[in-house]
Length: 286
Image 1: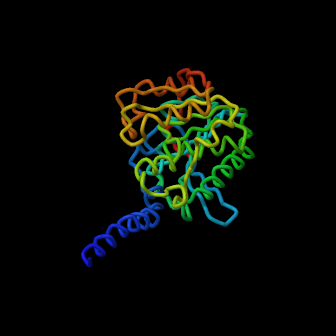
Image 2 (image 1 turned 90 degrees about the horizontal axis):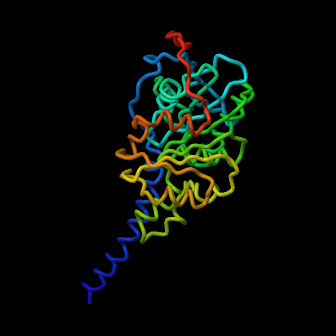
């Protein structure tokens, strides 16, 4: 009987330990505060400026702005993944996809995250904070630049940030790259025996709000993602039937943007005409 009681106690402790581990470690899993290595904007042709924005709680968010060379520009706001360099992402978009002189591109490192310019944003990441910071970025640059169009693109976790922004502010288009339907769903799939919805601090439920949006949406995914199940993109399209779903074959979660077709796909998604050949100064504006 004593051995039976001990076994029963161990069985009861296992789910308790799993719940505790998930709750305690979830922030470091959702927000690892590390970034991948991407080409430095200093080695790319497009002029840029370091972007610093102060939050209402007196923190400084640090990122990059590739200004347009015309008035009333097209503005693209880039929201990186949870282990993705916001500066590198914005640099890729400006230098490889949207070199047109009338296009401005901006990206901010999330709270607590470093960026490719060697700077780190103040604060600690959380879902409410990142949502507030996205609208702050929009409002700040809308005031400064008076853009004629504003597009948002989000990669992985950044797709949830971009979708939230689309629910709060007017956007011309929304582009989601390798998006989870929600962190809540992803976690529940990984831990089906746990009450994830009650434990999760950052559910990032894109699937709950994307159906309320009334704008052109493009969803880029790959059936060989390796991290986000292909069903997630289909769930999002089911919620937003107007969304165009594009599979990028022979790629993984971290290599979707490496596909040769990506520049043309993104130009189409954001209704931006291909650039004519132009000469761009190689002198960065710091």
